[in-house]
Image (cartoon, rainbow, N blue to C red):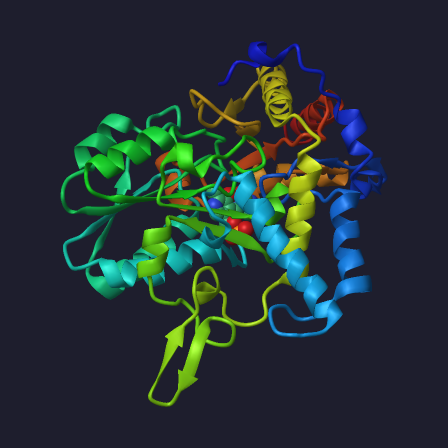
Length: 415
Ligand code: 7TS
């Protein structure tokens, strides 16, 4: 786990930040809401809600096509949002930022457009045991279509990618390595820059699924050195229905369109059509304009927050959880990664995860239970699922204590 000692000098007050999130100011089931399901989706600050509302109240029009003032305002805001994302992830250019519906669609875009054209029978795609289904199933679909093979990268008992095993798998058959930056089920922070170097040394490309990393660390696609990086806005305090595919320019230029329609073409005739330039080649149809503007507002909101201090605060909440967990008989944390974000995944002997989840909900505490869309990982640990508390910058020590009071209550009821 990353050491919080390095950031103790930074003042970080979640109580102040909480005021920015209207949804947190409510009671659920007659208790103040404790929202610990941030890996599923984060809550939205007033600034994001306002940016989306203001867009619809003042500027709503379609982009890139109108000569009128509203269309121009919408286009400026929409393309400005792309620039904001490009700066946020240190992309060399904003044309490498492709809007998608989210991380899932971004991975499918690469699987269909790059995978179906580059992969042949006998080729291999390596994906780790830590992956979310959205970074497994698209590769299985492309493998079925091309004759390529999906091969799992083993993990250690602690829940880290086994780098030695990965090195052993990286031969000339491997064309792509697909790994997450942070595991949604265990919180593992994967050494994606090192994995990128390893993949490239073997002649393979690498896609990094940043869905869980983007809200917890500064992401720099150039220093990671990956070929593709994907994330969803809704896990970054932005709206649902919008996400990003970032790709290397030369790869994106070579890839055929994913979806056909308006916006992605240069010319259309019945003898054939030609494609628009990047990024529009991959953006068929009217895009999620309000979503892009909402994502940019979320990034602007985060600019006022020390993200490293926030991450250290979240890790402190995890460490506090582990201290309290040590006092609960039959509670077992799943995974113990060397470096992790503030995700606490556990099982409680004698209590089914979904029963515990429901009991916590009765006390106003929101957690996720189940397989977390990581069935191969659950199979690895021989578990049907876990209870997961995933911390964000607005969670407090009091939230953790409420969680444990709920766990003790469950033990009394089921024990
Ligand atoms: N990749 C990872 C690592 C994820 O955690 C998720 C969603 C996705 C991809 C898919 O993101 P989407 O926005 O396209 O749906 N993870 C979770 C979760 O842990 N609980 O609910 C959704």
